Image 1 (cartoon, rainbow, N blue to C red):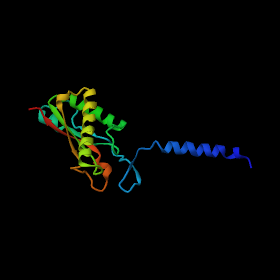
Image 2 (cartoon, one colour):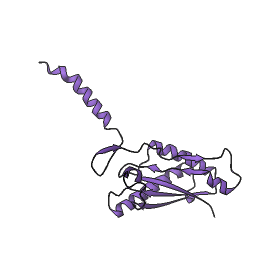
Image 3 (cartoon, rainbow, N blue to C red):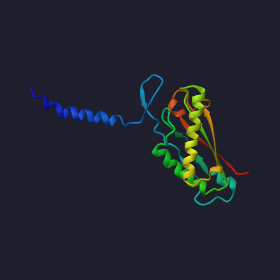
Amino acid sequence: MNPHRFLPCLLLALGLSGCAANNRNSVTTTGVERPAPTAPAAQVTVRDEGKPSTSDEALAALAAGPIYFTLDSASLTPEAQDSLERLALALRQRPQARVTVSGHTCELGTTEYNLALGQRRADIVRTHLGRLGVEPQRIQVLSYGEEKPADARELEKNRRAEFSFRQAP
């Protein structure tokens, strides 16, 4: 039997297993891997075509969904970066708008660790918005850690940064 006969099959199997390792997966409490949420990282909605006539209308026109992170990570995905670009554009067009970025985690880990991770998540969002031209004094950050879960059954939805908007005083 020729041992080189199986070499192409072995190389194909190794190549396919290497591709599978690049999938973004997260580990649940049962140890079973599931894909990270596929919801958009953040959806920015600007409800008007031009500049609104009042500051209240300008603020009401802003809406952004959460940005999701993988387990034990504060790195922005390409989708999150795209969403933050849209949010930064909307904020630059509304100089009176202020944003609070709140960092959240799932329940895995200690309270202290989760508060620190939530802070890192909020900080990375603030840093990225600053790079995109939003003045740092307009961005406030805070961490809730695991204290405000979005979904007790789906831990992936708790690993997020959320936005709230207000007017400058």
